[in-house]
Length: 162
Image (cartoon, rainbow, N blue to C red; front, side, top):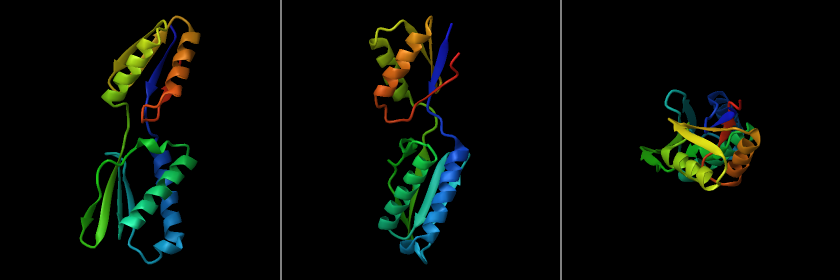
């Protein structure tokens, strides 16, 4: 029986490359000359820590980081920017959480959309992935087209097509 998995994973090496290129760009920019700016990636906890001097530079750093992620073919929607930045002495710090895996709300929406499409497929939520199976590959391809046409505020990948 053909099947595939719907997931939202971030390749940590591509993210690390994007952060390293963003660091190089920031050190060569004129408006960041002689500034105390740091970007660090915590690979275990999927956190990006940004430390800089003011809010304007923080916004510029986030824009540079987004553009570098796009060039590395990473979707910037995987960054959770809901946490506010906080002052730390003379500096401004911000933590960006990298969403890795489908959250429960997105999985529920995806599952509901698949069921309302009235296709002959079965969808099972398994931890942070959704396994979709059907008798025909054409039905699976129509599910992929359906999910690509909608916005779940999270990048989706379709893997393990069997």
